Image (cartoon, rainbow, N blue to C red; front, side, top):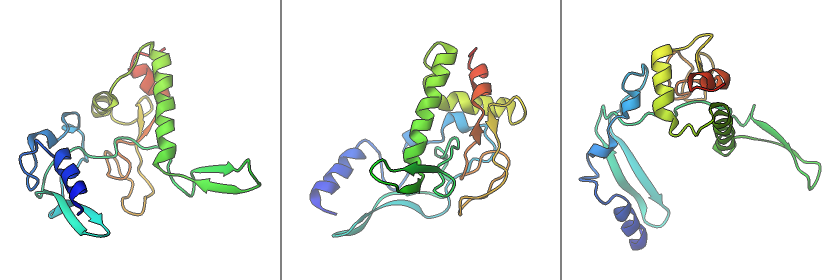
Length: 182
């Protein structure tokens, strides 16, 4: 790894007692403690920087069964196949796109709707949505829809939290009611 990148990485991880063992700041997210389906790390998990000129550099090694923050938290449509169809204004091109860059604006829009509905900013979602899911689960009046079917090539849908879908998709109307919306 080039010296300037190595220094930047060291600065980024400064204050971490050791890159070979988890620090206190990277423990399980407290709002996921009661959530069924969250997982701990597999054996031999590591974060590796692949530098074309210097080769791979291991930045972090996690021990087996390390319980950190499980991601994703919730699911929205980012699928390239069923995602979004766009028509180019520069021509007659029609393309299908997807990915996280489409999900971020969706979440921002949902946040704006929740702010409008509740009359105040909602703030950090994670503690609130996990608490609601842990207490009320899934069902007709839940703020979440369980993703029980389908897959993303790596993970299959199943009840509860899954690594492919988080705690599920949002029922925004019910979430707004739970957060004090009108």
